[in-house]
Image (tube, each protein chain N blue to C red):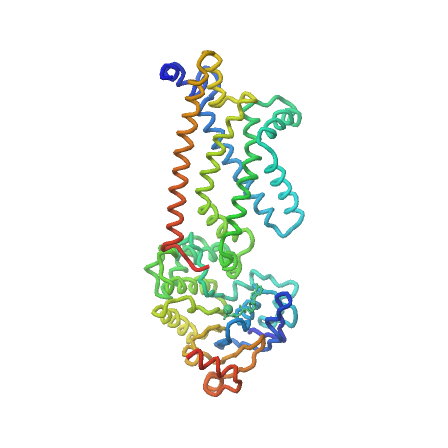
Amino acid sequence: MIRFEAVEKWFGQHQVLAGVTGEVKRGEVVTLLGSSGSGKSTLIRTVTRLEGIQGGQVLFEGVDVAGRGVDINRLRQRVGFVFQAFNLFPHLSALGNITLGLERLRKMRKAAARERAMTELDRVGLADKADALPSRLSGGQRQRVAIARALAMDPDVMLFDEPTSALDPEMVNEVLRVMRTLAQNGMTMVVVTHEIGFAREVADTVWFLDKGQIVESGPPAEVLDDPRHDRLRSFLSRAR
Amino acid sequence: MLEILEDNWLLFLIGQYPHGPVGGLAMTLFLAVAGLSLSFPVAIALALARLSPRRWLRGPATAVVYVVRGLPLIMFIFWTYFALPLLTGHAVGGVETLLFALVIYEASYLSEIIRAGIEGLPKGQAEAAKALGLGYFPTTFKVILPQVLHNMMPSLVSQFVSTIKETSLGYVISANEVTFAASQVNNQLMTQPFEVYGLLALTYFTLCFTLTSAARWLERRLAAERGGLGAQPA
Ligand SMILES: Nc1ncnc2c1ncn2[C@@H]1O[C@H](COP(=O)(O)OP(=O)(O)OP(=O)(O)O)[C@@H](O)[C@H]1O
Ligand SMILES: [Mg+2]
């Protein structure tokens, strides 16, 4: 579904992605591990061209996302993105955050969009908060609304960039629970996270990114319990 | 002073109306409200053009803003006063002239406030809209500008206060506003300029002070909103 082929990314003189190659298959859950600054966020942001690349290719369903004739806004509707900082629109209610895309992009009528948005809110357990502004929600609730907002567009794949890192510990689980359910229902997911427990339990594949390259990749049992690289070993011992 | 007020309060408030054109404080307020409202869409367009990656949009908009901000308002009023009749081919009244000059002038200042507001929003807002698949216009008009305008309410009130004071320049082209009314009264009485212009000062002060206080109150409320529950990590 997503293929990275020798992807290179530079910020000025600084190379952040140094030839990343890997594939995410339909229905697969990939968790992306790596120390701070290793390029995790940058990598998943290249999928919908939130970051451009300087070398290699990113393919979505076999099509180069940077190719001519790619309608990037259409592609972005098919790829849900969840940010560490939630990035809800603070002037819109939980419901409004979700209906915006439905009305503007799916051209749904108000009532239909509302109904659809309620379904999504219900799915993340927040139907009773539909009319609340983001400022009235807890961090965990905000992130769940952000997930619902992305899901409402019926994406083929969901990308998560450290979705629980900005949360107080007691709110982490309510978000992970939603993500776990999503994975069980067959959603294709790429999750950047420091939650090793989540990776172990939910992921089909774990990627370890180091210095802009995927240096280890495999099922969690292999990568997490029997790491071959020292860098991964020390990363795991710090993460526990 | 009270006597002057007793004899002339209607002139101060509404000019010669209904026996002549509306004037006085009513016209001052009309000019300020209309000037600011009409300049608003222009200001948004200027701000967006200034932030555009396209040179042919950014260049001219930047030039307009810089030129206007580098010149005193009175110059615009004179320019408009002499240029508008030439351009339109018929006589243009003082009020229309002043309004036109005000709109251009205020638009330049407002556009800078709007631009700063857009640049001051957390980057994640535009990014989240982008990630959803929203294009430039829905992102700008549904996500960015509503937040910017909300945040700039206090600045907007301050700008309104400046505009009220700036309308007094209409006097030089005989636009019928409150300063003009005061000078009419003064010309009639001839001997009491301090009282007449004291009244005028009091009028402006009361109005502007009230509005400035309102702006401060709004500012505090917004600060509380941001600092308290409203805060979202950038
Ligand atoms: N817009 C940018 N301009 C310049 N450098 C950047 C930019 N974004 C990221 N970088 C740099 O690229 C490198 C990788 O950043 P990235 O955010 O992808 O790392 P990460 O693995 O997600 O780290 P973290 O765990 O801290 O989120 C870092 O060194 C960072 O400083
Ligand atoms: Mg990151």
